[in-house]
Image (cartoon, rainbow, N blue to C red; front, top):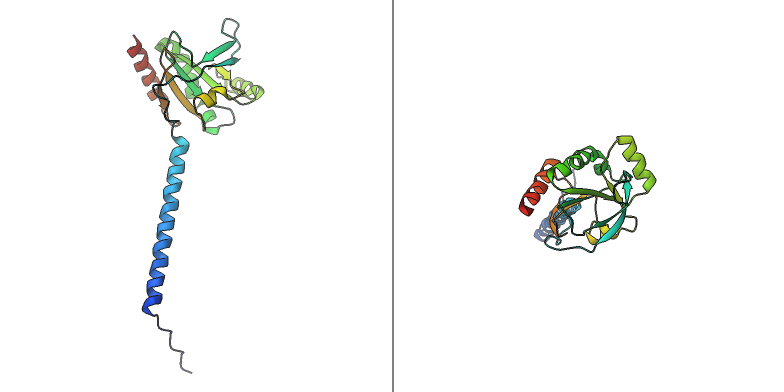
Length: 194
């Protein structure tokens, strides 16, 4: 038995196959670019706030509840020292993973000449339980109504902002900012204010 002759490919069919392959390659490339941009935007700080004041949000202090400390804090208001605001939450795995670094940063803030507040919208019981379990002492303000989150355009956690003494946003830090880089930036802001 003789094998059947293979069908010949016409030039039109070959050209059509090459076009389909080219379109598939372009589509795959666009998908990869979109994926990279999505990953970058997840870690990018909110934009457009540098040089601006945001609406002031008055938030209750949740942790630690030391009597001499203020019960409510005006976030975004002018203050005696530059201020670092760090948005986080117990439901955010990267936030919990770097909580020790945030605690170290907060412990040295006063000596470095700046104030530091962390803000969370999570349930108070969940925040208190995690803080006690980890023995963290950094101050936590409760933003239950997401007023400060909205004012600072926080759409992903963690997020951090440096404010000068007038309450003007001077810098937004990326989610993966190193603690030492944040500390140095805050020291520079303090030095510029003197």
